[in-house]
Image 1 (cartoon, rainbow, N blue to C red):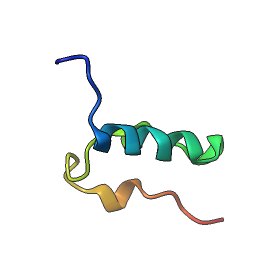
Image 2 (tube, rainbow, N blue to C red; image 1 turned 90 degrees about the horizontal axis):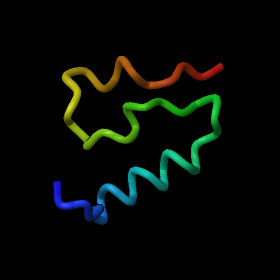
Image 3 (tube, one colour; image 1 turned 135 degrees about the horizontal axis):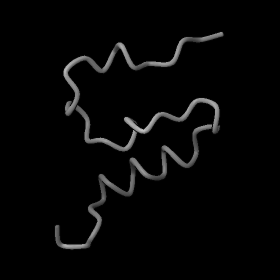
Length: 46
């Protein structure tokens, strides 16, 4: 790892930080498509 963050990484970090704490998931920081079934990780609306 080069130690530099890409624009996409910064975007994911900002989205995570802007998400209310009770809705955050560590998976939000992973690149899109890196999990086999991302739909199963979506928070359930209450």
